Image 1 (cartoon, one colour):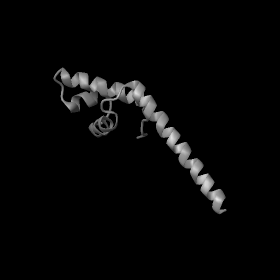
Image 2 (cartoon, helix red, strand yellow):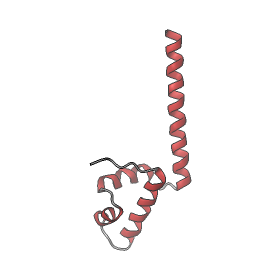
Image 3 (cartoon, one colour):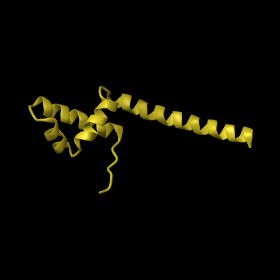
Image 4 (tube, helix red, strand yellow):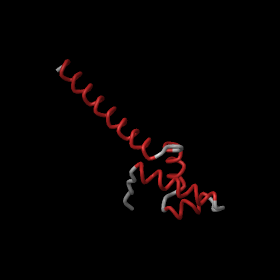
Length: 83
């Protein structure tokens, strides 16, 4: 089965949807089933995106991209200095 890829905004929306269902008396398993994700994904996402809003998730995504770019630049500079 192909792995689905969700954006941080979609993840936060699904976490909020599950929180609403849990507050209405459903179990975590029932909320996850209604949102179309596994319980493992729910707990992993809650750990990473727990109290974040959509804007914070966008900032985190941008920060991760910047760090990756800097790491690539550093690797290229080190290779140029030694090569």
